[in-house]
Length: 274
Image 1 (cartoon, rainbow, N blue to C red):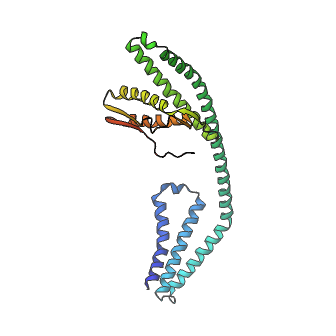
Image 2: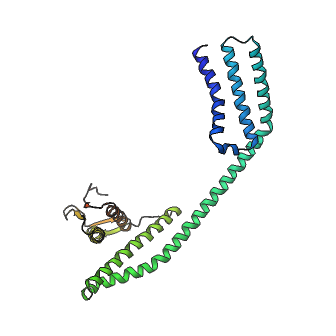
Image 3: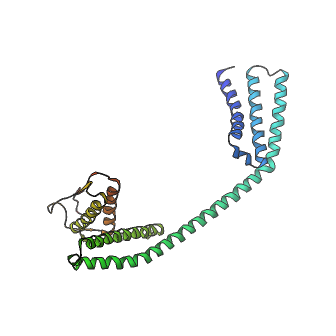
């Protein structure tokens, strides 16, 4: 037998072996409808007969009784498989079509549920943000009016802790609202001119207290901000998104740094007039 005929014969025999081995290896396949199991077995037996016939032809045994018997069995199995498929194929196609329609319906239901959830989250966050604004506004009023001057150190630290916690909660609420806007395709950048240096110094001051409070001196925070000759005083951008990016970067650095140093560097990479 030639090498190519041997490879073809082995391929013929390997297909039914793999099918039967899969039926044995994966018990869940036993839950298939009986008509599908019969079809799989018929197909495997048909391929096995084809492989046996090919092997006999390549071995010049076409005139023997074994080859004739193999041909009769192959013809019988092929005819049985064909007759079995005639009513089965339309049924399988109908079942597949119903399954696809059901999947499409479930996908639409899932999308509708997600939209309802995001709408609810947006409503909830709006309701939470209102009292948070009251809290942060009153804390800012207390700090601006020198409340720390008449309070003890413990009270001042408590006010600072409340202020930091309120700011974090407010940022989280805004993040959820941003997700809702993204889902609805309504997120837009609100660009305006703002003081970059003042914003950066406020971020540095706030995060420096957070890092010191969490790590108790185990982590050194070093802000490196270029001087007036390089860093522009005012920029035109979305200050809220800018603050979110910077806060997220420093928050991650604070979260994943147990000891050592966190260096916050701000510099001009490319000065291009637009």
